[in-house]
Length: 196
Image 1 (cartoon, one colour):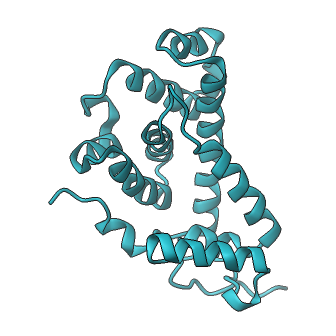
Image 2: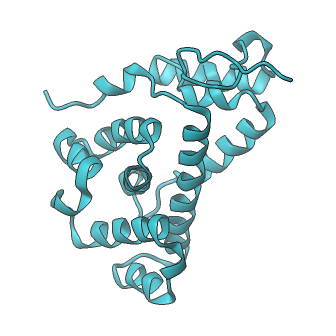
C-alpha cells in the first residue's frame, strides 16, 4: 500500500515535487511566475506531481487566455470566476478573483462578480457570457444551440463563442482537480488588486 502524502502549504494530498527535481521547462515556468507574480502559484506546484501534464495544461491555459476583440482578458477571467463560484472551488475562485480584479482595474466590481455576477452591474454582453458559463457548469445537458445564439447575438464571433465554451469547460476540469488534490490558494492572492 502506498503511503498517502501529508499536505504541504499547498494543501495537496499528493506529493509536491521539489523545484530542482523538475524538468528544465517547468523550472523556467516557475521562474517566470516568480518574476511576474512574486510567487509560484500552488496550481503549478501541485500539478508538477505529473510534470508532462502540467506542461500540457499550461499550454492550453495560455491559448485560452489570449484576448480577442470581443472577448477581453477580463472577460476570460470572469468566466473562470463564474465557473469557480458555481463549483465552489476555493483555489480557483481566490486566484482568478485576484486576476479578475486586476484585469478589470476595478477591485469592487471584481469582488461583486466573485460573489454574485447577477448583482454585479455588468453590461449586457458580460451578463450573457456569465449566464452561458454558469449554465454549462451547472446544467450542461440543458445547453442548446439557442444558448450559443445568445453569445452570437451579444456580438461574439463563432470562434469567441467556442472560446467561452472551452474556457468554461477547462475551468470545470481545473476546479475538479483543485478539489481532488485539496489545493489551497496562495496567501498572496488575497492582497492583490484590492480597492485602496
